Length: 318
Image (cartoon, rainbow, N blue to C red):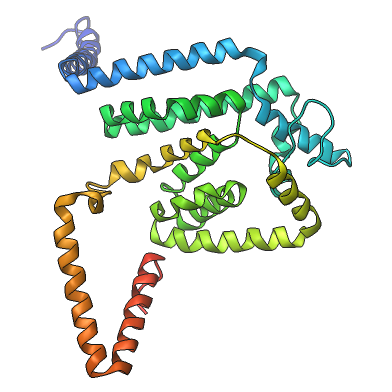
């Protein structure tokens, strides 16, 4: 029989002991990870890279952000009736589709100091968020990927180029529904075209929606054809060095690589004999059918190609 004085203390001690047990187990788990050599190596690599990033961003100071300032100035020039493709003053020209200018407007209406802080701060936060997801899946490969892409990532953070945000858009397209995924890929592709090479990493249905959104973007550019012609003239007439910073788009392949057990199996020499055998078998069967009945062989080949294409685009069997 418990007296009135000891009952509240026991009730308070039970959850306290449970919490202490949880903390002890968590600490033991974290300490046990310190014996994982791969995790230690990953932490060391990431600390060094992040340290260099931080030092570089601080050293650049106000000299950074030339590309982001171009987007910011283009919207303001456009809203004031000017030509964003031929700006006056210390601004780079705007080189993207004219109908994309309103997409930048909510951000560009901020004062430059605030806008640049929001732009770079968002890029850093998204980089940390995507890096955290990748690190939880595969610590050491993630650290190596960050190290290999450190220069293009740093270049984009320094200039404020939108390529890094396009990378995050293609990254996000692998975690959302097909319509939104297609929209993100389509916008990124129409803005830079290089993200179009990453079409294959989308889910099948998202690939089909990506083509639909790309067609809509083309219609919008045709609808603003006079300005689109000016955009293309500025784009191809604006000399730029070799765009090594585009390599940052490889970061968008991390979810696809990390979630597939053998994503690049076709590059493995041990798999080549099996692939060659399967190809020879299929080609031999089709050739035999085509020789005996050309019409049936052509129909069969066309049907097989159609089914493969529909499957690739997530349209089901047809």
